[in-house]
Amino acid sequence: MHSLEDYYELAGDKVISDIHKKARKLYGKHILHINSTCQGGGVAGILASLIPLMNDVGIEAGWRILHGNPDFFSITKKFHNALQGEQINLSEIKKELYTQTNKLFSVYTHINHDCVLIHDPQPLPLIKLYEKKQPWIWRCHIDLSHPNEEIWEFLKRFILRYDAVILSNKKYRSKHLPVEQRVIYPAIDPLSAKNKELSEGDISKYLKKFRVPTDKPLIVQVSRFDKWKDPVGVIEVFNLVKEKIDCRLVLCGSMAGDDPEGWMIYEMLKKKANRLIENKDIIFITSENSILVNALQRSSAVIVQKSIREGFGLTVTEGLWKEKPVVATNVGGISLQIDNGKNGFLVEPSDIKGFAQRVVQVLKNRKLAEKLGKKGREIVKEKFLITRLLSDYLDLLNEMIR
Ligand code: UDP
Image 1 (cartoon, rainbow, N blue to C red):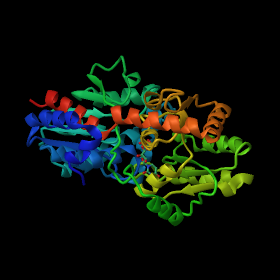
Image 2: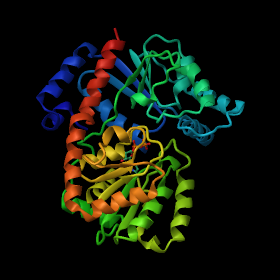
Image 3: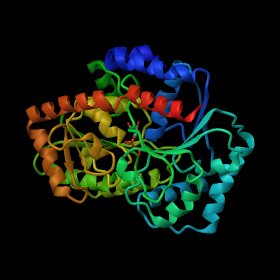
Image 4: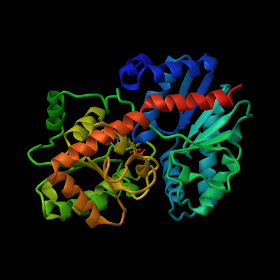
């Protein structure tokens, strides 16, 4: 657990002092964050770093998790997919189970806080189940660039009750939503197990433990096994790269508690990989281990993120922070982080060949890789560290809480 002072060297005096100033009017205020998993995926990672820091600067911030059964998470994953543009059969049964699970939670969870922050769609209906005595903010981490209309209309009746909506990209704003829609970029914690500096000894210890050989350059994608992260596309890219350079692919994806599709997609990929000659050079990892992720990212020759939709893409931020060349798709929040050719490469999601060419280019040209990596870290330092995120939240809370 870190205190704000630990970030002093990375963030600088001004940022730290401004945070303390902004926190002053919020001392003792009781803030509640609610999401639906404490493990796996970007939201849980952010909350695990952000909430202790909020407490450290004098706010009383808490975190509760909406529990649900497998059917609930299967439905909310369908909602998530539909919000990212897929079709959905929005039956009454689905709506009922969604609202009933929220209702059950509300029966044993008392809310008398000064502000409530709801993350993502799973706990969205809670707002209807309480007598509202404080501002409620919906923080959506999803890529809302092409939402399915039916699900949007259904969820909108809850969203309209909120005092503000926070999005990760201004492109996700909806013209037809008369609620304040604010953009706050997510961020990484540079001192967390996933991002802190690691010694060479620790890196090789973790790679050995998880049987990742380092005799060939590593191409790494760290992502939940999710169709939106396009792991099939990554394998296709790898096949093309392999024709030019001998290398290994690592697909590392832990299973998030609120994403029931992970194992199914993982099994499908393993089968696909088994049919390939290059199979022995594709390594799958499903372990939930932050230091392993850190070690993998640090030992990669290139980090890839071949998403089709991406709310923000913290794995890209993590790669940039570690001064790695990142080749990723020009979608959602990734486009906010990579300036094509300056601190990484952006490729359109359907362009498998172009993606592979960029990977080969950075594998062959280590000077270029280094240059991109250096620039990448600078951009993260400037825009995407947890101290900036904390500061943005304090601004919002100061406005919302009287
Ligand atoms: N992550 C992890 N282990 C894995 C896969 C992902 O720790 O096997 C982490 C990853 O490092 C990042 C987060 O989960 O911090 C994923 O965030 P991102 O915004 O990239 O995607 P999301 O899962 O939220 O859609």
